[in-house]
Image 1: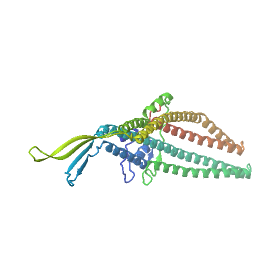
Image 2: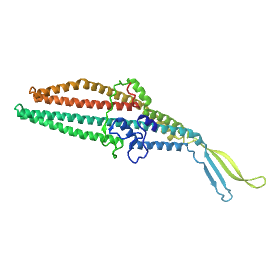
Image 3: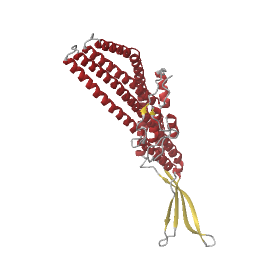
Image 4: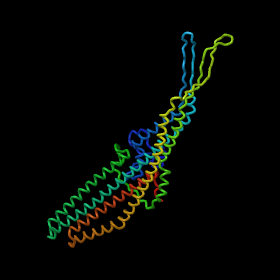
Length: 417
């Protein structure tokens, strides 16, 4: 399981780390990219380490399933005319049932391991989304700071026009309010960026550590390759998702347990009695009497164990069908979200933002020259601000959708052609 997680991002950290640390081969960085964040999270995550304890429980169940029951020894003490007697019982059916018990326990261990790999994928997705939110918060802070500077410059211009007699007190008051509002929004964006970084550090498991306290986000380059067709992505997801494989193992394990419970209807024990006897010459000797002891299933056919096993098999089958449907929906939703975000981002970057920027610059220059009213300046600046922030949101939506798509596929780096 650790090796499979390693192929996703990084090795799993020590079972009981005393303090957050960096994975082997990774040094401290000043700019934190999402790959490094995922590696550190998988190494330090307390939640993932807690989930791994369940694997130890399953391994203990496997050891218990392989253990043979101890033989039963009984001793009858000599009382009155009765002589001493001994008896040894060995459960033969336990030997016959042992392979089935071990097989079911092995399937359970593999199922838990696959579930842990899926938990690692979920953690990697959450870290990538948190990193995208951090990048978005930093970019929003920068964009809002630039817009606050524009509002401040416009306010200075209208003050100059007021001194020259070309503006009114109403115009000055309106622009002053807009400039102060832009400054407050920029300050709040700074706080939002700091909180986004702390949320990411929480997922990375380094909250109570100086690691990455002053790190800056490193945005990954945008992948310009086209996404794979939906049918191909669905095939990849059904084959690679660890939770799908865990559900298949759940069906197999439930079937093994059902066969085991049915075999428990009969109990057969080997019996070896020792009784005192007398040899032909009159000397005492021990008489060994082998035999069998069979539990006759007249009243108890193990209906409880068999019924529970049948119900578990039915539930595992239903869960498997539901999970396949969920995988299809997750891949479809994530792919459509990524496609829509890609198209919207291209439109904003190539057409919408350049047009609004040019219009805003033209209106501002006309206002400086006294050829445009201040209301037109306000409207152009608001539209430009909304467009810039919307473009940043779409860019973050694209990164979130790609993170969700990778998680839905069960692998990273296979969504694009």
